Image (tube, rainbow, N blue to C red; front, side):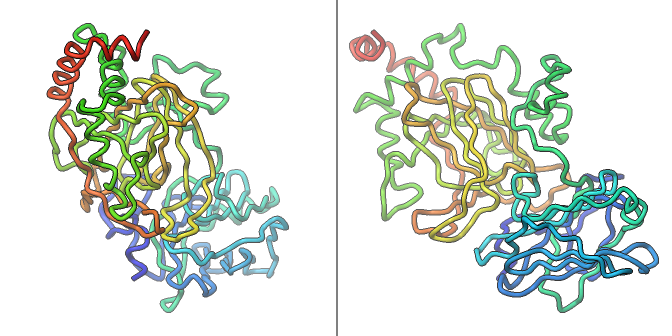
Length: 416
């Protein structure tokens, strides 16, 4: 049963490029790090109430780190001398929540150990320890993870790079990025996205990729009018979708419109390019993106994003580790490893409908395409959502222009 907890994070081992950024794993008792002395080991606990142990050894098995994840702390001990590396602030370990997974990061360059739960990133650290400078050689020689065959651990993935810096959520193209941007680590260069992430970014980041173009400069206002006018298409469609995520508990605010550009090419969950329309106060359920890459650009208005460590199948849920607001022309990103689980909302304090372009694509070496998004319903149960098509973009634009031209009185009412 535990194999379903992480949706698509678990896959079979596949051929990788030289020095891959990550390797997905099958259950084994020995796993080599991609680079000696560094990396992140991501794993699942089959039983959330049992201690989970593994060892990171050097090449000769003469020394290493013994790591225990318990219910209330994370224990790290050096094998050769029984030295304990204690983080006095660490008071958490394994939690009893469905969907939880864990990680351990080894950083020999900075002599740092860290461990956490959910997405492997600074915000989710539970344990952190600064080793001594003289420990660097010892750490550099660590190169393999050994797990007992009857262990509570199910390995998921090895990442090449350890956890070091906070992950920028905003993306800029190389022509926009300044030296200050790089130094402050506030923006991610588009060149640092995955190969498919760069494709998506380059497709929608151009100056001419705008909503209110010369062909229809009132496009966004026409959409706003359609949303606020009973009988018009957007208003009616939102009413129809009130039961989409929770059939027994309809909620008009838990709706948004999906206007697709082009067709499903089999490389993404659903159609790869989708314009999403978020009226004020409307939101999505907490959901993930099936391990796909994504690039999201705000075309109009503003959207608030809450990030979660994992998709928690629990009535009480799991706390968000961060919220951020994106405004017009901001671009953000999702990879197979980070920013996957989130909730989007057009805050009640905003005055305009938010319109975004969402682009999805699986990594080139991902052969287990999953044509759904998983989300948590109002009862805390994980459900499967098939990315739907409300209307094709070309047809939608024509319809909005027809409505705009036919509703001059409504137009005056909303935009005086």
